[in-house]
Image 1: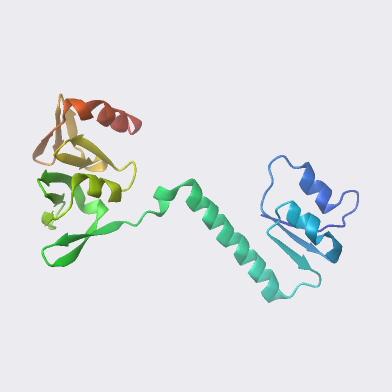
Image 2: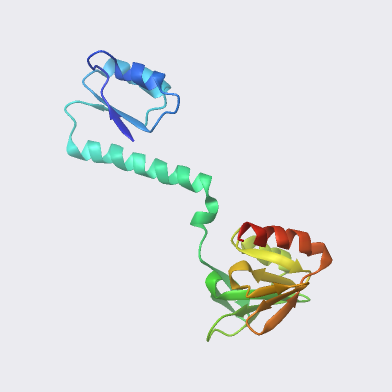
Length: 187
């Protein structure tokens, strides 16, 4: 973030900004109104005229913060993924936190979501494809037509079997390569 004046000794703020190969977020603070159009052509976030009132300065700074947060979400949408989902269980919606899920098992038109600790498993009306779309990217692996596992809950992998706690889950031939690639990134 750069607060930049237009008229400076030896170099103008516009000249400095044009010379940068990688431009930071810029807010001009200047006494000269006649450079505003050229400033916005250089993608500055705001243009403040001196003397700057504190509330106007804060609006410009908050605009920069919001813009930075927006750009961060664009770069890494997974970082801003909610940490739960709601699933239909019987006649109610039940909140399930991703960190509680160990694995998901397909049961025809339903799925069973297995969870850690005191939380018991949940039977929900979902397809495996639909639940996969709701899970955070990079946190799970489809290991069989009937199983999805959360990568951070895997205790061990031996041959074509995954162990999560006391549960053994098969890895199908069709899912094996993708699964090994996903756990290889975390090795």
